[in-house]
Length: 171
Image 1: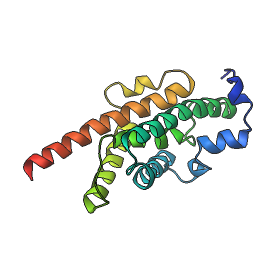
Image 2: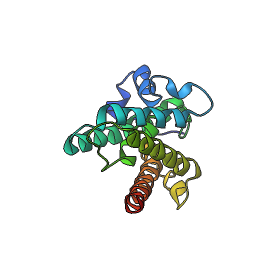
Image 3: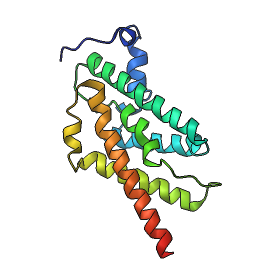
Image 4: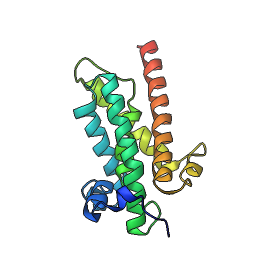
């Protein structure tokens, strides 16, 4: 792998780049780093983003996605590996997309069920990569690392909204 770093990313120290890409080393723990990254993203959404106004939520999500592309790209270069398993910023950054458009007045057990369902849906689509999602990750660098997760998150979001709509009709 012989890609050049973007100048503003090359100037950052490796401890920062790799720390961001692995979520402070969380991606180096255990046999399922992507699941840990998704769980961390779900907890972040629940604790920080779920109460945000939509414009702020959109801005935070966009910032996470852009940062994900740049940090995942640079981590690939520094680790000399395509989409390293320990790089989990991609799973973390896309989790707000799974829950896009969902808001409750206060935390409830229904919210907890929806968070679990969204997390599980995302993991299924991220792992199995159906509907051509696997081809999307062939995009170069950090864009490829992030793109398949973005699509998996959006598919999860659509399915989650559909399940909730059917649930409202039935109950």
